[in-house]
Length: 413
Image (cartoon, rainbow, N blue to C red):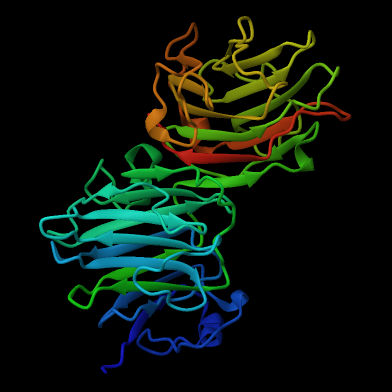
C-alpha cells in the first residue's frame, strides 16, 4: 500500500518546531507530543487514499475552528467524507454510536435515486443526527470550501459556513458571522461534555473519492466565544471573552436563576457591551448619545417585581420595564441581537422563541424589538472594540445566578 504522507504547516517558534518534530519540507512524524509543544494552528493536505481514516495534525487544545478546502464527494454512489473529532482510534466510516465527548461531521453524496445528498452532524453519545440534515450545497458537483466553529466547552455551539453561500468566505474570517452561517446548533439535548482535547482527529473519504483536500485546524473559534460566570462578577465587573464585530453581536445569557432570592430585593444582573477596559464602576445610566454602548439589566426590583430593561445611546427602557420574564419562578435564558440602530431581545421558550434555534427567532416573537429612539444610535465602534462585562449585583447573598455568556459576531436576524 502506498505510504500516505502528511503535509503539515506548523505555526510555531523555531525551537518548538524541533520539539514537535517538524522536518524540512513540512512533514511530521506520527509520534505523540505533549500539549505544551503543539501549535495552536495546523494545516494538512490529504494526498492519498483515506478510506481507512487519516489521523489529522495535532493542535494544542480542542478544535475551535476547522476548514476543509477542496471538499468533494461523488454524486449518487453513496460515497461520503467525514471528520471524526476526539477519538482514540479511527471509529470507521459510520460508527453505531459515539461517546459524549466526541463529534462527527459527515458529507454524504447521496444514492440513486435516493436518498438525497446531505450533511449531518453528530455529538455526544448518539447515533442519530443531532443537528438535522443540511442540504447539499454543491459539494457533489465540484470542490467546495467549508468551515465551522465549535464555541464553548460543554454543550458546544456549532456554526457552519460554506464559501459562496450567504456571502461567507472561509478564507476571510471577517465574513464568518452568525447571520451568514448555513447552519447553527446551540443545543444538543441531554449531551453535555467538552470535545476531548487530548484525543485524535480523523479524516475519512470513501475509496471512490479522488479529491485531495486541505484541512486546517485552530484552537480558537473565529465567530464567537464563551465565558463561564464566576465569583468575579459578584458585586463587581467580570470581563467577558472578546469578539470584534462591525456587524453587531448576538449574546446568549444562560441559566439566569432568581428562584432562591426569597424576600431579597433589588437583585440584578447586568450584561454590558462596548465599555472601557478595567472598568470597576457599575452600569446604571452608563451610556451616552451614540456612544455605541449597550446594557441589558434583568432581575428582581425593589418592589419584588421582575424587571428587564435596556440602556443604549443615553436612553433607557427602565421607565417601562418588561415583566415578561419571571426570574423568580424558574431558570431561563435570554438572547439578544445588538446591531445599532436595532436591538432585539428574546426570552427562551416565550412566544415560540427558542434561543437554541436561530430559525425560531423573529421580530414577531421578541419580547423587545427597538429600531429607533430619541437619541441617534448609529455607531457600532464601541461594540467592535470595547470590553464586554457581566455584573451580578448584591454585596451579600442571595444573588441572581448566571452560568455562562456566549458572544457571537453578527446577529441572529
